[in-house]
Amino acid sequence: MTPVRLIDATPVADDWRLIRLEWHGAAPSPGQWLWLDAGGDRHCLPVRDADPQEGWLAGIVPGALSPDRLGPGVIANVSAIQGEAIQVSGDGPLIILGEDLGIGPALAFAEHHAERTRLALLGGQYGVPATLVPSRFYVPALADGAIAGIAPLERQGVAARVALGRDDRPGVYEGSVFELLGRYLSETPAEFRQSLQIIACGPWSALGQRRADLAASVGQLQVVELPSAVRDSTP
Image (tube, rainbow, N blue to C red):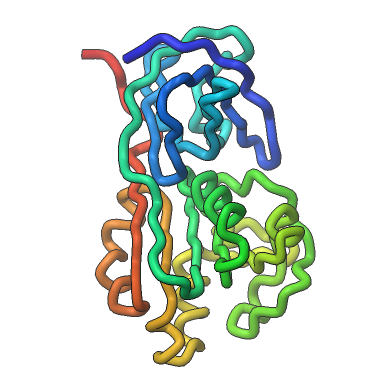
């Protein structure tokens, strides 16, 4: 573990926090993550953005899963970069899915690949770190249960839908992102499904059991499995 100075821990929508810390190594990418050790616990910080020239790395996490008392100047310990960066191949359409801690990497990847992203599905038990708006994109398979989009993705021309379990906000699906994905794929012709590449980011416990089914449903699948959000750092 290496001590670093935190630049900020900015509150964003739904009590998420954008955490930026000093970083001068090679630039990591969405799909990778590190351990952030603060307050006696070790927290998973998925990479959202990084700029080694300006000297920072940023990740976004729910307030419930982030260390207490974070702010500018606080010293925390971080691990080396873990995991593999998301990779895409070919030029086919992308379906990007992010659940809980996987939402930050999924959002970043959809923003970086807006021209190829056919649909982004985001959600989980902690809300989403973005403003929800009525979507201007019609998704027939999901029109009866999910019509809210994500403001920054709407501005880039990306259709997105949100699933938040039992949260009854207008336009939000009351269920899981995987249920939304299943509904979408069930109404997608088999030939077109084989042209799709799914990028799925989330906790390993949620993704591991679904890997085989997803792989059988589409042409390509990349799974970004993140560890449990918090673990005890004591020996």
